[in-house]
Length: 142
Image 1: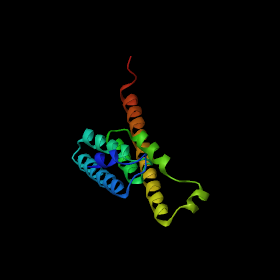
Image 2: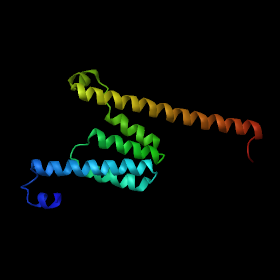
Image 3: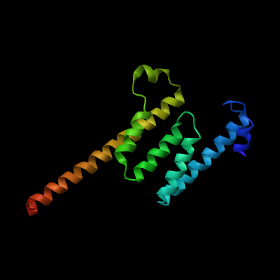
Image 4: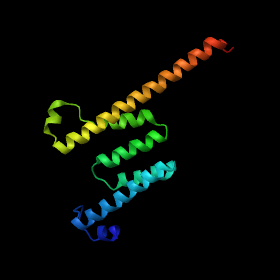
């Protein structure tokens, strides 16, 4: 239905009806991605969120966060953290220009970013300590 409506549009001018159809489709894709993530069907989750991204001209917070969630489950934690970092507004002058709703979304993103960085650092440290312990117990392999 959306594709038929888009064929009839003039240029890149999007009618309110087409915009509503895109929003519904995007919402369904995000729900499918979340359900696939929760059932550990990671390929379906990735495909769904990538299709949702393709529907957007400007990346939205919801789609971007879902993409970061999928990356995280794909053990692409460094990329997920970087992706969230790129979304967060850190400059005070830019933060002042944000609406209250955008400031709240930014705070949530910042909290997720801090948790992601902490988790990533903890995993790296655990890995390094584990390797050092193994080496000290059994010596270097020759």
